[in-house]
Image (tube, rainbow, N blue to C red; front, side, top):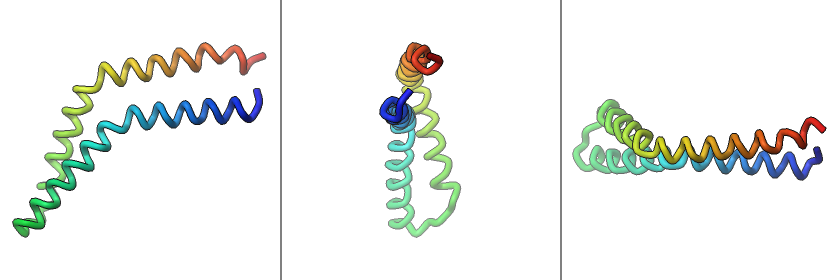
Amino acid sequence: MDAAQVLEWSRDLLWTALLLAGPALLVSLVVGLVISLLQAMTSLQDQTLSLVPKLLAVALVLLWTMPWALHIASHFTQRMLGQLSQVVR
């Protein structure tokens, strides 16, 4: 196993992690921005006002993207297990 192969696997791992975490992080960012704008316009500075909608939105996105995320994660696992024979040689 050489350094190029380790870098390729690391890149694949980071890309897969970004794909899996991306939708939830993006929704959290958008909901947080909208709530922050509403808080700035109304002068309400309650912390739970921003936390609860973000939690609900992220939970809904995770439920909605669960089949896709499971497919991506299982495909990544199959690829890594398939390449495991190259490591043990």
